[in-house]
Amino acid sequence: MSWIGWINSAVVLALLFLTGVLLKNPVRLFLTGKKTTGMLVGIDTTTRFSDSPEANSLQSPIVEFVTSGGEKVTITSRSYTPSISISVGDPVTLLYNESNPQDAQLLMWREFIGAFFTLGFTLLIILMWISAILISGDTKLDDPFHLLPALIDHFRLNPFRFPIIFLLSLVIPLCGFGTYILTKQAIDLRSHGIIVPGHVVGYQESKSKMNDGSEASGVFPMIKYKDATGTSHTIRRSLGKPLSRLKSGDVVEVIYPIRHPGKGVVNTWDEFWPAPIFFGFLMVAFLVCFVLVLKGVMG
Image (cartoon, rainbow, N blue to C red; front, side, top):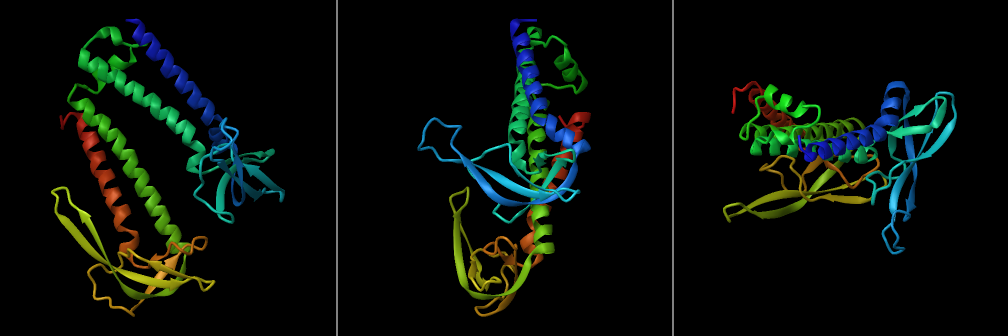
């Protein structure tokens, strides 16, 4: 085995150790912590991660929650990003340690970006390492523990099957994530959204170019509605009743999130379910292909 195998092994082990460090506290709270819902009460900003005073400030949510004992606790997220997707007053789910409520973990995707990036980079190195072994056939690229050759033999990997497995291992989680997010958004909006009447005020034509150079166009009804404060909003690309006989002045049912009244949609199934159903179908189809490839039925 050459020095390349030793270096790759050291890098992979170091990245796995870093991933464990990043996930240690969240995993501990998942196992022993108490789950509750807090509220975003503010946003902490900082520029300490940049030497330039003109740099855009990074943001971190400030969340307030009440423990099971009635204690009111305010915490600031451990991570800072250029922007956050929630607003003051929005609910935030979190886990906390009853003996030390300040040691809390917000259950937001942004909180785990560092760990996911590190783990993803680790998997990328391993996949590229396997590719090098398969393409070159050089046993000197083996790892010190001889795990990769065993993995290659177990799944009967070759230069044809491995790229398929690699691509499927990427698209399946992405489709699953898309299905989960879109389904959750639809359920939350249908369960907690505010329903108001909307009026068709006109139509808007949308044009786009196809791969063959041709131009496709569609006409979408423009629907205006008012939120609880009386502020008017317009839906400009509604999928409600596509190709229907809606006319200007027709009344439709609109539903919008309590905290984001400008993000209303027509309250029909075709505004909520086609996208998650599509991603869910792709996930199942790709998962079936993945199993068939592993079993050797395909490739």
